Amino acid sequence: MMKPFLLIFALFASLSLRAQETGIRFGDAAWNETLAQAGKENKLVFLDCYTSWCAPCKWMDKNVFVLKDVADFYNAQFVNTKLDMEKGEGIELRKKYNVQSFPTYLFINAKGEVVHRTGSRMSAEEFLEEGRMAADPDRSLSALVKRYADGQRDVPFLLNYYLALNRSDRQTAEKVAAEISGKMTDSTLSTPLGWKVIKNLARTSNDKLGKYYLAHPADFKHFAPVAEQEALTDRLLSSSLYQYVYAGNEKAFYEGLKHFSQSSSKDRQQQAVMLEAEFLLREVRLKQYIALTDKAMKGVLKNEAEKLSFLARRISGKKETDEKMKPFLPRPIKWQNKPLPWIRKEYSVQSTFGWICLSLKKKEEGLKAARKARLLADAETSKIQKLAQELVDEFDNI
Image (tube, rainbow, N blue to C red):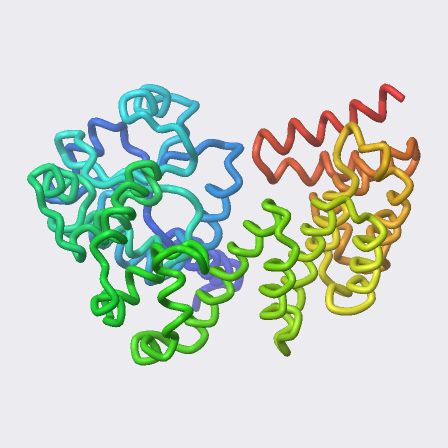
């Protein structure tokens, strides 16, 4: 019979092995060895280009790379490796492959040629779709670039090309989007392909695609779930409202705002507050801004720490606060002092509170918040860490 301590050791060993098998299996071989392995197995290399300070990289590690569906696909299709682009071989590969942002995901053949390129934080399904595109000789970015150069211009192809470009070359992607929009007619928009084009390319309620969709919502009920259609409607109208904010078009803004403010949906009501607050601040109607946000704090935004923090940040500014706004700064402090136990764990909340206190010369309260923000910033990007340290330094100089 196995002794108790041996049984426990075996159990821990089993759990440890199982943990290692969970998620994408990243090799640690040298780059040339990784390429050689890809050649032997007739696979592409999936290279995760990251840095130690990249928050989206860490998020993907914890929330996407560990999922079974993702791991099963990537482990079967690719030789997986990851390199810090600021250390070791990563430094040269960053130059070779012109990696400018993080995370960047490269799919590379055994010859060292990039077949597909994408990046940024994304959902598991989006990440899986990028892998499917890379593994498909007809849909990888390199294949699509060649077909485009050879003159192919049908809409299904152009849409695939746009989707492949969207995360790696926004400028070219927008040129392709304009080509697609120009080819679409009313008869082709009311089709499954038309829905896919509208869903991916419509920007506001005023552009060609958004305008058609909002004028003919019933045409698309067989192509998409209600929730997906409603999400698109909200996105298009919200984008248009921001345009009215920046243009100072009050009549159009408040007419469009009714879609959100008069809705029974709590999410839409919250969006209405955020939109109207932006309009009032842009118009420097500070008393109305405070009245709106005070009411929201007691109502629809009662437990929304991030949104309240954003509203406080918008009125407080950073180092220099507009003189006409200073009389209103005690109000955001009131929002920030809400007795919610979880509110103090957010970097943005602590940072905003610190900047407001700095504007009001409240050193004791502000320095505590600034130091907490600096600790919380260790989980964020280097830019955020720098801003957090600047806030601490500002208080030290008072």
